[in-house]
Length: 275
Image 1: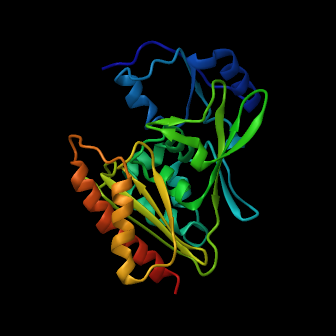
Image 2: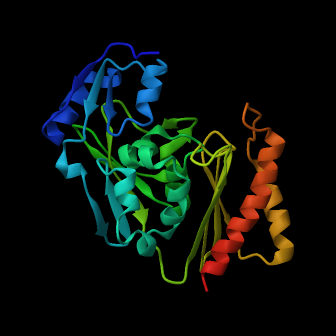
C-alpha cells in the first residue's frame, strides 16, 4: 500500500519545528528515522496531514553525560548509540539489548527516541528505559516537561505525548558500580519484535525485572534479593499478574512460560554480574 497524501517540512531550527507542530496540532507528526512511522503510513494506520522531519536539527544530535544520566537527543540513530564508546561502561543494559534490536539496516536509520515515541509493547528500547527508571524530555512551543518512563508509557502504542509536543531527549540512568544488568529475548526470528523480552537490574536495593511482549505496555517489577527457593514463586506470581494474550505469534500460556524461564535466567545473570 501507499500512504495517504501529506505535506512534508524540514525545519531549519528547533523553534521552527515546534511552531509548525503547534499550528498543526493533531494533524502534524514528527518523523526522524521513519522505521516505525513509515510502515504505519504505508498501511494507512497513521494519516497525518503534515510530517515534520527533525533530522537536520543539529541540536538534537547529542549523546552526553549529565550528572548520573546519559542524555540521548531525538536525532540520535540507534546505530550511533550502539557504537558510542562508553555504552558498555555506562549503559550495560542497552549494550546487552542492542543485539536483539531489529537489524543492522533498521538500527542504521531508526532513532532511539523514535522507538520510545512508537511505544511498541514488545520493543527493546522502551523496556530498557523503563527498567532503568529513565525519563523522557518533552517540548512544545510553550513549555518543556520531563516525564518518568513509568508515566510516559500508558498503553498499547500510547504515550503521554500531547498535541504539539515532541520528544527532545531521553534520559538513561548511568550504571552504578556493583550493579548487574542482563537482557534476554525470544522471538520468531532474530530481529523480530519479541514474543517475550526480559531486562533485569540487580543492585543494593534488590532486583528489578522488566518484561515486554506480554501486556499492553512494558512492565517492571521490583523484587527483594531472592534465594533459589524463592525465585520460582516470585516469577510465577509475576507471570500470572500480566495480561497475557493469544495472537498469531504465541499463546498466552506460552508467554507465561517464557516469563518464568527467561525471567529467572535474566535475574540470575544480573545477580552474577554484580560480582
